[in-house]
Length: 144
Image (cartoon, rainbow, N blue to C red; front, top):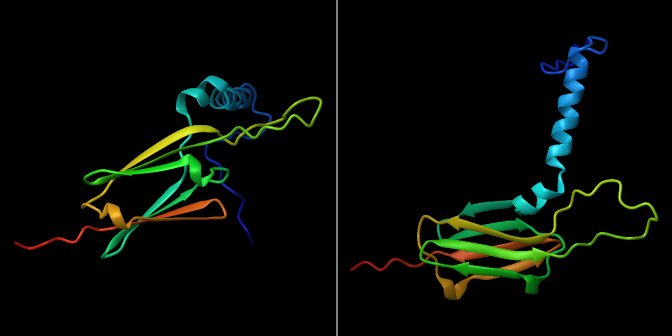
């Protein structure tokens, strides 16, 4: 016997005016979060995963639609900055326009602080199916 799904925020249908208020709040947030000015102000940030092994930091970034030539990786003392851009790929194939646009485009920049310096001369970058993999070998510590 299965129990009904519990939705603590949603009100049962037919409980006017509270259900109308709930729907109005949903529409307001949808309009606000989908507003063009918010997209331009917030830009877009690619999703990243960062791993650490004993000898390196590994960064995986989901960047579909970003060309290898449009990606810059800068390494400073103990940080790595990944910047790039993705072109607008909107299509004008339909006479009435798009129904929904969710994929972001434009420039992005992510800065990650690392727990120790990396060897800038041995950085490796690979790209496969829209995922960039950046291997940042740790700098060998020399004991005095």
